[in-house]
Image (cartoon, rainbow, N blue to C red; front, top):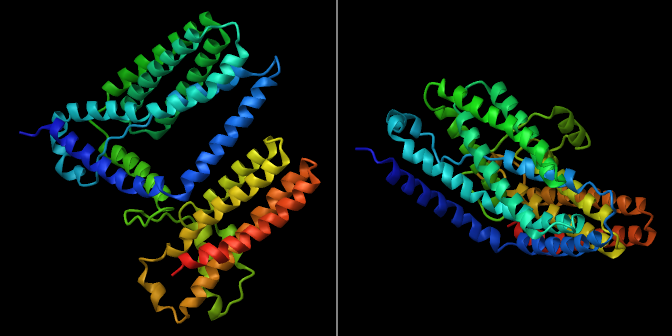
Length: 404
């Protein structure tokens, strides 16, 4: 007889082993040092900002949106795989214990996000509402946990619905309700919070009735969702180690491709220049990761008051971009057609180094101009000169040795 509980323990053990294999590389990588520095620097300026908090600061809006989005984002990790469509789907009636365990696992693994956000927003709450005791915030945390569990259950129910439009509409409505509820709670309007909670309960019960009308489990959707989340993790882990399970995603982006390749001469020696440029634009999340780092770094540089810390953060995010774009060199390692190119292998190394120089130069210019906009003229000169020196030194001293 099929034992879904034992099957779950087997899947969970394999899943944890898979995550642990790559987390070992991630936690020992350069990224952890950078993250530690970012957290430390942010904490210092965060505390300084709280001492100068204006009276009309929209704390309730900020915390309400943060908590509302936090509880709304409640994905389900089912740990299902493609072969299950053939071998396990026939035992769907015996999978109740399995899916119950996956719901519990999904809730537990998302607790760290709650504790991180609650810990980060706690000082802001305390600095704004000095007349409230700490117990009020603790009760708010309890409400967050309850709504997190509620949204997780509703997400599971709605995964049975085949219509994507209905699922997205339901998620949007619940997200708005969650944000409004926590805004009223933080603002102290418990009556309006209770009314909005009643509306949420109506949606909760409505979703339950809708799910009961669905025929069976939407196995294809569950597997698709789980695979997508694992691919996100694999793409992150690929920055630190080779991930054979990573599936390449390709997007056309024709206008961007034409923009970055029109300056490449149509000659054999420029084969890899063309290849790496279109790979950067079309494959994986390279271009998205690059611009996200620019945006996040720009926010830090703009908000931090100390000019020297602006310079430090500009070089820090330059380092992050170059370090993460290095994986472009190995992107086509499993493509045998690359080995058939009648081009010297040295051209491949020269092409990726040239691209990294160009991406680093663009980022330096943008960060330096941002510092200039804050009227820090000395910081602009130092950031521009220091960034150029770091770009050359890091690529020549570290990056080139990794391309072997």
